[in-house]
Image 1 (cartoon, rainbow, N blue to C red):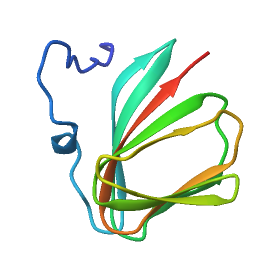
Image 2 (image 1 turned 180 degrees about the horizontal axis):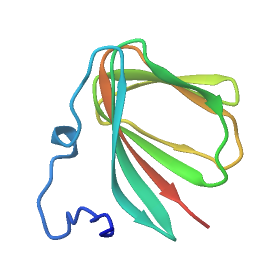
Image 3 (image 1 turned 120 degrees about the vertical axis):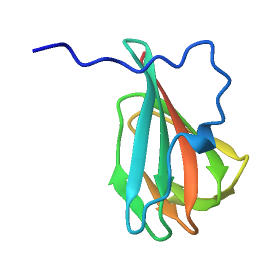
Image 4 (image 1 turned 120 degrees about the horizontal axis):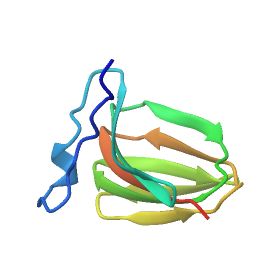
Length: 111
């Protein structure tokens, strides 16, 4: 069985908003980078979709690319819109809720 091919996006000019499409009632994701030192993933959330509260063992940088979201970190809510960025610290509970349809880029730094 042939090994699955990894998509190679190096040396390409990319608009990350174009990498995932909205789908009704869904969250769509596409991983751009997956290495020992970290990951970069782009997500598209339909309105009112979200990720329930959870923790991650690494710091994560969330940047809103389109739309509006409510990010909760250890009980504090952060309304966010396109262009905003927030750092979610490792091992702190956080959640994501789409206020409108929204797209985000998530960068996880593995330390």
